[in-house]
Image (cartoon, rainbow, N blue to C red; front, side, top):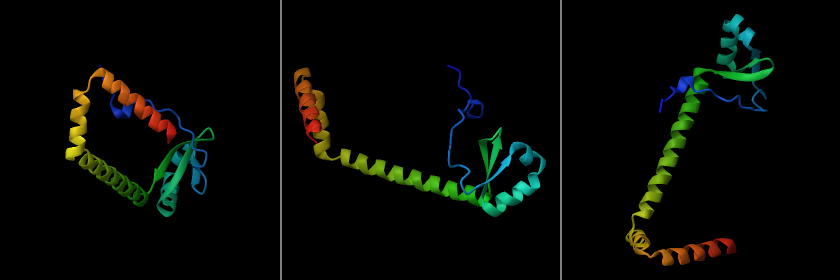
Length: 125
């Protein structure tokens, strides 16, 4: 199977109804013809939405705003990693290991009864 590099993957045009709310907006033509002014605006405000045919197509970010997003991304990833580690630790207890062993040793009939009982419990909750 041939892999397409990420830069070549076609992206669907997403709809962000509030993308321009409170954010400066310029047309693609303005961004091209007046890049210096747009760059000043981005540096001052943090972001500028670039539109084409009246639809938002891109956002130009200041380096400060980009840094904030990267910091948030790193924090979110660290939080997710910590949650995964906690869950993995809970799964490594002797009780959890014994439950997994019992599952693999169970007959198909025992597994069926356990599945029905689990479904019944989840319906009551």
